Length: 270
Image 1 (cartoon, rainbow, N blue to C red):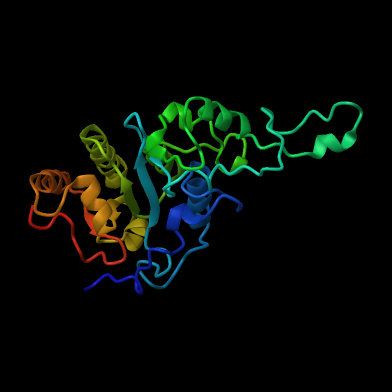
Image 2: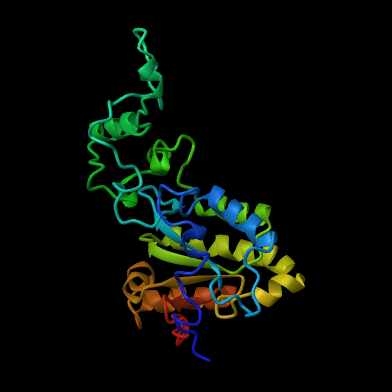
């Protein structure tokens, strides 16, 4: 059977952990988002006679490597949309102004919480208008608040997988690789997925309800990627680098499939 986009859509309920963008009730690719999604799923909001549910084949999220080799969840190439500033907002360190001088209007003035950290990054030579995740260390990235919401930070892959376990996620995970540039980070990615499969995956195997909605091409957690991004992260098809990493995935039982066309297996021939 061919698993095509029209039967198992990537843009389904679980796309970017169920919430797309930075202005909705939850922010995409975050721990609060997976908690909300898992709770709604457990409450039966996504039940379906189709197995797996046609609009909820898996929980999909995006992974990138930071400058210092950490793996984080982040979709966009650039930082601008996630941490955008309004040019009319005063650059202040606090989330809301103090409203000094007896002017009670000041207490309702929203001050972008990212203004100071972005200014600090600029002083370090990082232009947030053009910078990407790979230009920042994890420590620098964590100074920024997603969507300008205080306390909403980019999660690491480790933190997110742990949150999936804690939230009782019962769906397959589709780990979309956007950019992983170093061997240590590649190995870390596979080790984290192995941990998830060997611990939580074995528990899900004993859960009849979870097994009914498991997305078979990915198992409980698998890799998806556009072909060119998979090659950039794990080597050109046919190369020694690709054969090495594809063999490692197969050894660990980690599936790697093409975005939209999941019958295309990136580990075949390794």
